[in-house]
Length: 173
Image (tube, rainbow, N blue to C red; front, side, top):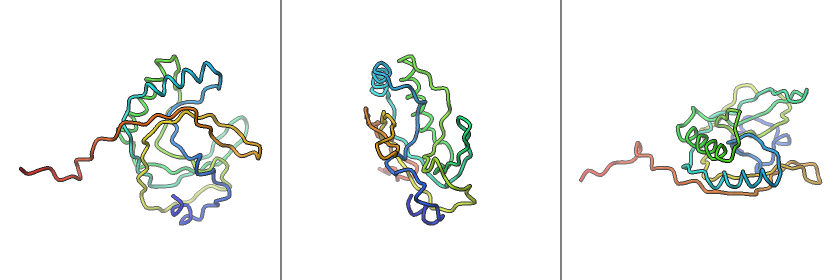
């Protein structure tokens, strides 16, 4: 990812800390003790396989929130793998068993800057295989220096992805 960032001359000072780069699988919910318990039960109830995305471009987007307009940069994935939709469905099902709905759609991507200085032109990069192999429940917060970070309060490994037989020689005898 850093090679793609450097190749495209992106200003690293405006990037989110790499520890914050993630794939979102649900909406945000208020941080109350009751909500944490529901989310922890939902996370423990997710039955899904790991999923590999192929990130093949960096895109920008303009977003309006509470009267402010921001530019965001994101790595975007080629296509929409079936495993990603299956993972989203499993997360939504687990949330719904706790009475929580996910209203927004999610696409395969990881945002690397929420406050980018400029729009992007065409970008170039080699494809990057990026595997989602666990689900984390996090709480976002500003620390004393004003930096935004996540505190992990739950972590669940996903089941291994099935082998890709399309690139494996089958036994002959």
